[in-house]
Length: 147
Image (cartoon, rainbow, N blue to C red):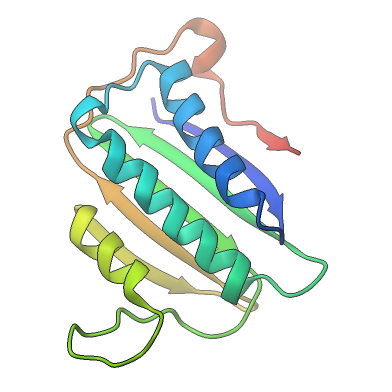
């Protein structure tokens, strides 16, 4: 049975480390072994949360970070209500920003953007995580946690 947890974060700089901590603490609580991918997951959560704060979340709104572990797959999603569609900047670009999604695309096993009305979800997948073995309390862990 898949495990799922999400939390909303305000449009604020301190939401990035809070989102990263939430993701990693959740995976540890679930017993998901990502030892060899720990830094990849950590960096990717930081990048997509930073993009949501800087580019995606309209003033006064929040973004949502969701984690889903289904067998050997870890899916990370960041949804915001802002416009636009994130793009991976090519290597030869002279743009000052936009390289974070290139890192995400390189580190994650799969990556994409789903457009909604309003907003979008930036999602990424890591394969071959060691399956979590949920305790009875975790088996029903589909609640939403608010900060």
